[in-house]
Length: 318
Image 1 (spheres, rainbow, N blue to C red):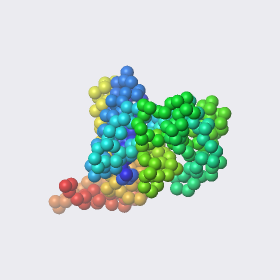
Image 2: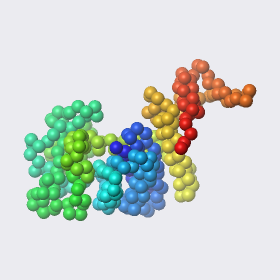
Image 3: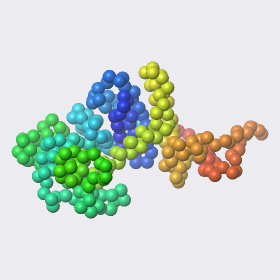
Image 4: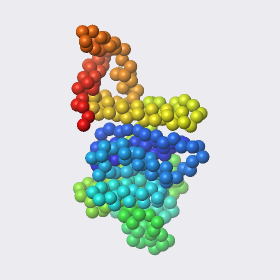
């Protein structure tokens, strides 16, 4: 399944998009300082840009994730229309608000209904440390227990899943969480209940949503590639600068995918600059040939040699 993830922050929209869960690229939408924080038009524009970065063969099976700040009703309605296209499956996994309605539903969950949460390696965690349960039936089918609210304005196929875990020291908790002793995180998804394989397990759906945290890493590495240094007070100049940053992030992503292996295939920009991009090599011309001389004492001379060889022997694009 290919995936498109975006995040709203500061005065612009950074996003990441990745295909086949391998490589990622960064794109940024610069917005005016007086722009609204939850303008769905901007969200749709950024999401469309994220999807367009994914190669066409992978766009038929998409997972779109975002945090709770961007998960609006209009955005989910837009994703629902994408899912209606013939031959395309578009699922979303978005953050959901822990409001009074959700807190009331959580209080109504039997203690035996909680299921184990999956660790990153696929092993289950102890129920005394973390748990996951689905709230859809309480919110959709038993609205009388929640004051009669059956989520009428949200997509009909939306499911609500909640994860609870023991808070780590220093965690900021709401009054409800401090009283209860658990930290809660909600997500909404349109992945059907009767899905094949792991998609039918709510523990897997919750673990799948946690992958969205990688967008924070992409913003951090984007800053290391120039995003953190806007050069001017001019909107147009900054927009051009961010376009150049996005191109640099894309080039690094393709470099890791096509030319690097081992640890360098997942290395961050600072590591690539130190080991490969800023190597003091010399380009020698002679005998109708061009030769790159790499210092033999450089610890990553072999990696740079293999990287250049792979780049020069790439097949021509079709």
